[in-house]
Length: 226
Image (cartoon, rainbow, N blue to C red; front, side, top):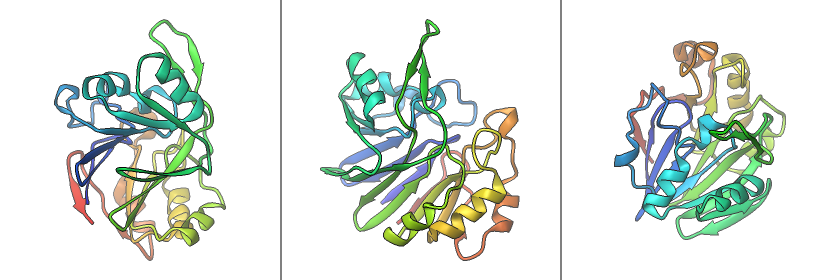
Protein backbone atom coordinates (compact mmCIF):
# COMPACT_ATOMS: atom_id res chain seq x y z
CA UNK A 1 0.00 0.00 0.00
CA UNK A 2 1.36 3.40 -1.05
CA UNK A 3 0.30 6.35 1.12
CA UNK A 4 1.18 9.98 0.46
CA UNK A 5 0.46 13.31 2.13
CA UNK A 6 -0.34 16.44 0.13
CA UNK A 7 -0.74 19.34 2.53
CA UNK A 8 -3.47 20.34 4.98
CA UNK A 9 -5.52 17.14 5.43
CA UNK A 10 -5.10 15.54 1.98
CA UNK A 11 -4.07 11.91 2.03
CA UNK A 12 -3.77 9.69 -1.04
CA UNK A 13 -3.88 5.91 -0.78
CA UNK A 14 -3.04 3.60 -3.67
CA UNK A 15 -4.17 0.03 -3.28
CA UNK A 16 -4.71 -2.46 -6.06
CA UNK A 17 -6.47 -0.72 -8.94
CA UNK A 18 -7.78 2.10 -6.78
CA UNK A 19 -6.59 5.59 -5.95
CA UNK A 20 -8.31 6.97 -2.86
CA UNK A 21 -8.22 10.65 -1.96
CA UNK A 22 -9.18 11.85 1.50
CA UNK A 23 -10.31 15.50 1.87
CA UNK A 24 -9.03 16.77 -1.51
CA UNK A 25 -8.67 20.51 -0.80
CA UNK A 26 -6.41 21.40 -3.75
CA UNK A 27 -7.37 24.75 -5.30
CA UNK A 28 -6.75 27.44 -2.70
CA UNK A 29 -4.33 25.24 -0.76
CA UNK A 30 -0.90 26.86 -1.04
CA UNK A 31 0.80 23.89 0.61
CA UNK A 32 -0.35 21.16 -1.74
CA UNK A 33 1.71 19.76 -4.59
CA UNK A 34 -1.39 18.43 -6.37
CA UNK A 35 -3.06 19.86 -9.47
CA UNK A 36 -6.74 19.05 -9.93
CA UNK A 37 -6.41 18.34 -13.64
CA UNK A 38 -3.74 15.71 -12.98
CA UNK A 39 -5.59 13.75 -10.31
CA UNK A 40 -7.58 10.65 -11.24
CA UNK A 41 -9.11 9.24 -8.06
CA UNK A 42 -11.45 6.29 -8.20
CA UNK A 43 -12.69 6.99 -4.67
CA UNK A 44 -12.97 10.12 -2.51
CA UNK A 45 -13.47 9.91 1.27
CA UNK A 46 -14.60 12.99 3.17
CA UNK A 47 -14.32 13.59 6.90
CA UNK A 48 -16.71 16.57 7.02
CA UNK A 49 -18.29 19.34 5.00
CA UNK A 50 -15.99 22.32 5.56
CA UNK A 51 -14.76 23.84 2.32
CA UNK A 52 -11.11 23.19 3.17
CA UNK A 53 -11.90 19.46 3.24
CA UNK A 54 -14.57 18.98 0.56
CA UNK A 55 -12.36 21.15 -1.62
CA UNK A 56 -12.42 19.99 -5.25
CA UNK A 57 -14.50 16.88 -4.67
CA UNK A 58 -17.28 17.73 -7.13
CA UNK A 59 -14.97 18.43 -10.06
CA UNK A 60 -12.76 15.43 -9.33
CA UNK A 61 -15.69 13.07 -8.88
CA UNK A 62 -17.44 14.14 -12.07
CA UNK A 63 -14.32 14.08 -14.25
CA UNK A 64 -13.21 10.67 -13.03
CA UNK A 65 -16.56 9.03 -12.25
CA UNK A 66 -15.23 8.60 -8.73
CA UNK A 67 -17.38 7.32 -5.92
CA UNK A 68 -17.61 9.67 -2.94
CA UNK A 69 -18.11 8.28 0.56
CA UNK A 70 -19.23 10.78 3.20
CA UNK A 71 -21.53 11.25 6.17
CA UNK A 72 -25.18 10.96 5.10
CA UNK A 73 -26.17 14.65 4.96
CA UNK A 74 -23.03 15.69 3.10
CA UNK A 75 -23.43 12.79 0.66
CA UNK A 76 -27.03 13.86 -0.02
CA UNK A 77 -25.90 17.39 -0.81
CA UNK A 78 -23.18 16.16 -3.16
CA UNK A 79 -25.67 13.80 -4.81
CA UNK A 80 -27.86 16.83 -5.56
CA UNK A 81 -24.90 18.26 -7.49
CA UNK A 82 -24.67 15.18 -9.67
CA UNK A 83 -21.98 13.33 -7.76
CA UNK A 84 -22.03 9.57 -7.20
CA UNK A 85 -22.11 9.76 -3.41
CA UNK A 86 -22.73 7.14 -0.74
CA UNK A 87 -23.89 8.36 2.67
CA UNK A 88 -22.91 6.57 5.88
CA UNK A 89 -23.31 7.26 9.59
CA UNK A 90 -20.96 7.38 12.54
CA UNK A 91 -20.15 3.88 13.72
CA UNK A 92 -21.17 2.45 10.35
CA UNK A 93 -18.82 0.08 8.55
CA UNK A 94 -19.00 -1.18 4.98
CA UNK A 95 -16.77 -3.33 2.82
CA UNK A 96 -16.39 -1.77 -0.61
CA UNK A 97 -14.42 -3.29 -3.49
CA UNK A 98 -11.53 -0.95 -2.63
CA UNK A 99 -11.45 -1.65 1.13
CA UNK A 100 -13.37 -1.32 4.39
CA UNK A 101 -14.58 2.12 5.51
CA UNK A 102 -15.77 2.95 9.01
CA UNK A 103 -16.82 6.43 10.12
CA UNK A 104 -15.88 7.29 13.70
CA UNK A 105 -16.78 10.23 15.88
CA UNK A 106 -14.91 13.53 15.75
CA UNK A 107 -15.60 16.65 17.79
CA UNK A 108 -15.82 19.61 15.43
CA UNK A 109 -18.52 21.18 13.23
CA UNK A 110 -19.57 20.47 9.66
CA UNK A 111 -21.11 22.80 7.09
CA UNK A 112 -20.43 23.73 3.49
CA UNK A 113 -20.57 27.31 2.20
CA UNK A 114 -21.62 27.60 -1.44
CA UNK A 115 -20.31 30.21 -3.90
CA UNK A 116 -23.59 32.08 -3.33
CA UNK A 117 -22.91 32.23 0.40
CA UNK A 118 -25.51 29.66 1.38
CA UNK A 119 -24.50 27.53 4.36
CA UNK A 120 -25.43 23.86 3.91
CA UNK A 121 -25.58 21.56 6.95
CA UNK A 122 -23.16 18.68 6.48
CA UNK A 123 -24.19 16.29 9.22
CA UNK A 124 -21.77 15.13 11.89
CA UNK A 125 -18.01 15.51 11.46
CA UNK A 126 -16.13 12.23 11.37
CA UNK A 127 -12.87 10.41 11.47
CA UNK A 128 -12.23 7.50 9.12
CA UNK A 129 -10.90 4.01 9.72
CA UNK A 130 -9.81 2.52 6.39
CA UNK A 131 -8.68 -1.09 5.98
CA UNK A 132 -7.18 -2.75 2.92
CA UNK A 133 -4.44 -5.27 2.16
CA UNK A 134 -4.23 -6.23 5.82
CA UNK A 135 -3.42 -2.65 6.90
CA UNK A 136 -5.40 -0.13 8.95
CA UNK A 137 -5.29 3.64 8.43
CA UNK A 138 -6.94 6.15 10.76
CA UNK A 139 -7.60 9.69 9.53
CA UNK A 140 -8.86 11.67 12.50
CA UNK A 141 -10.38 14.48 10.46
CA UNK A 142 -10.76 17.75 12.36
CA UNK A 143 -11.19 17.02 16.04
CA UNK A 144 -10.15 17.60 19.59
CA UNK A 145 -8.77 14.71 21.61
CA UNK A 146 -11.45 12.51 23.19
CA UNK A 147 -11.41 9.49 25.46
CA UNK A 148 -12.97 7.08 22.97
CA UNK A 149 -9.76 7.25 20.94
CA UNK A 150 -8.59 4.62 23.40
CA UNK A 151 -11.40 2.36 22.20
CA UNK A 152 -10.43 2.99 18.59
CA UNK A 153 -6.87 2.02 19.43
CA UNK A 154 -7.87 -1.14 21.28
CA UNK A 155 -10.32 -2.34 18.64
CA UNK A 156 -8.20 -1.48 15.63
CA UNK A 157 -4.55 -2.37 15.19
CA UNK A 158 -3.73 1.01 13.63
CA UNK A 159 -0.73 0.99 11.32
CA UNK A 160 -0.78 4.72 10.49
CA UNK A 161 -2.71 7.53 12.18
CA UNK A 162 -3.09 10.94 10.59
CA UNK A 163 -3.82 13.46 13.35
CA UNK A 164 -4.34 17.25 13.23
CA UNK A 165 -1.88 19.35 15.22
CA UNK A 166 -2.75 22.88 14.10
CA UNK A 167 -4.60 24.00 17.23
CA UNK A 168 -7.14 26.89 17.04
CA UNK A 169 -9.69 24.83 15.01
CA UNK A 170 -8.56 21.37 16.17
CA UNK A 171 -6.34 19.87 18.84
CA UNK A 172 -2.83 21.26 19.07
CA UNK A 173 0.48 19.42 19.49
CA UNK A 174 0.09 18.57 23.17
CA UNK A 175 -3.45 17.19 22.87
CA UNK A 176 -2.53 15.44 19.62
CA UNK A 177 0.35 13.74 21.44
CA UNK A 178 -2.11 12.51 24.07
CA UNK A 179 -4.37 11.28 21.25
CA UNK A 180 -1.47 9.21 19.95
CA UNK A 181 -0.99 7.77 23.43
CA UNK A 182 -4.62 6.64 23.38
CA UNK A 183 -4.65 5.37 19.80
CA UNK A 184 -1.32 3.50 19.98
CA UNK A 185 -0.59 3.48 16.22
CA UNK A 186 2.66 2.11 14.84
CA UNK A 187 3.23 5.31 12.85
CA UNK A 188 1.76 8.78 13.24
CA UNK A 189 1.73 11.56 10.63
CA UNK A 190 0.80 15.14 11.65
CA UNK A 191 -1.70 16.96 9.41
CA UNK A 192 -3.83 20.13 9.35
CA UNK A 193 -1.11 22.64 10.18
CA UNK A 194 0.68 25.62 8.54
CA UNK A 195 -2.02 26.09 5.87
CA UNK A 196 -3.32 29.31 7.41
CA UNK A 197 -1.77 31.72 9.97
CA UNK A 198 -3.93 30.56 12.94
CA UNK A 199 -2.70 26.95 12.57
CA UNK A 200 1.04 27.58 12.25
CA UNK A 201 2.90 24.84 14.13
CA UNK A 202 6.32 23.21 14.32
CA UNK A 203 5.85 19.49 13.62
CA UNK A 204 9.23 18.80 15.19
CA UNK A 205 7.82 19.99 18.51
CA UNK A 206 4.93 17.55 18.11
CA UNK A 207 7.43 14.81 17.32
CA UNK A 208 9.36 15.56 20.50
CA UNK A 209 6.23 14.85 22.56
CA UNK A 210 5.58 11.38 21.15
CA UNK A 211 6.56 8.17 22.88
CA UNK A 212 5.82 4.66 21.69
CA UNK A 213 5.13 5.46 18.03
CA UNK A 214 7.21 6.38 15.02
CA UNK A 215 6.56 9.95 13.88
CA UNK A 216 6.81 10.50 10.14
CA UNK A 217 6.71 14.20 9.24
CA UNK A 218 5.78 14.16 5.57
CA UNK A 219 6.23 17.18 3.34
CA UNK A 220 3.58 17.58 0.63
CA UNK A 221 4.20 14.88 -1.95
CA UNK A 222 6.20 12.61 0.34
CA UNK A 223 5.00 9.08 1.01
CA UNK A 224 5.40 5.89 2.95
CA UNK A 225 4.89 2.23 2.08
CA UNK A 226 3.00 -0.31 4.15
